[in-house]
Length: 518
Image (cartoon, rainbow, N blue to C red; front, side, top):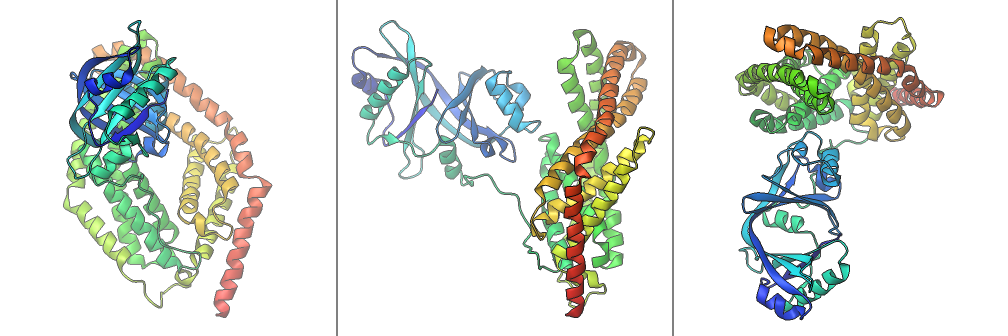
């Protein structure tokens, strides 16, 4: 089912349309719409996927439509009591599943809004069956603005929809097919970019000095971290804090990896302050993860266990409220403000012409390549030492090493001699998936036992079956992740990957010799 969009100088009226339709079709007025909004996640995940989620408010309810950008094909339509705030507010089915797949746990926020009376018409045939619908939006207030008209076909009545479209074009003044989706028009009217913003990238090349390149990457990460603060404070969704922590962890990891290219006192100070930031943001993020986990498990739990899971979620929510109060004090406090200001000032300060360490002068392709090769060798060594008798901590340490390797590749992979390593990166992601699942389940089982012990006696009795049920599932997933480790580690440690990282090391040696001769 594909919507046909028209633009015109006049607004379509029922009388003008009826005069153009002919005797076989008639027009019936529907309750008008009062406001239209286009929803997306803060990072415009739906638009990136070629979709737009539109809400029309009619008589206090919300008519929600998901369609493809470009061709106007409708993925699904549903009527809700109010506009959805998250993907889980949309019922399952093609529309709900598609939104959930792309939006995840992110909030659905209005990209653009428009308050105007929308004329809604039903087109009926001789048997009084609805064969098409029409929505006619008035033009905006800006000079030269055009009215929108949309013909919404009814499945099985394509010929009628074509006839209605032709009649609408005849009834409108200077009507023509719209060249773009209404979303893009609404964004342009609101003064917003019509394309999703691209992720900021540091201005570096393979020959950029290592200390310069690292500071530029860290500066981009600082901007990304700061951009998440307002959303975290407003509690728009849990991903603002998650993204803040990702930028923070990447910064700490790169600062550690390249500490020999920067003044030691500055490295020590900012390492300490970034560690503090990690500690003050960790508690709320852990509780966010627990709330999402309990919500996910409750949807698939036996009905007898759901009250127990809800009791656990209530306790987590109570703890989160207290942890968020502490987090807000810290994010609004002087220490965090000084950290951001001083960190930005240091990163923006020109590097010395003659740094104390030769490593600072090496081209970043050389400096990053050497560190990536070292991180890979360490990960491979740690992974090869893991067997059935290894403690859980061995897998956790390997996970941390793999994260450092991933951060290095993500930050500097594009400037490596052969560009970002696609095959090694794919194998690394697969290994990280299984290590992450294993570690998450270990931590969740410990936290589950602690939460169960902290419940009041009455709630503890209600939750006991749910705790046992959930712990059994977590234990099985933990065991499955551990059993899958060697199958995921093998491609990561393959001969082809070893050859790739050895080549990075040889390139580093050649480049260093060339630098020494210069």
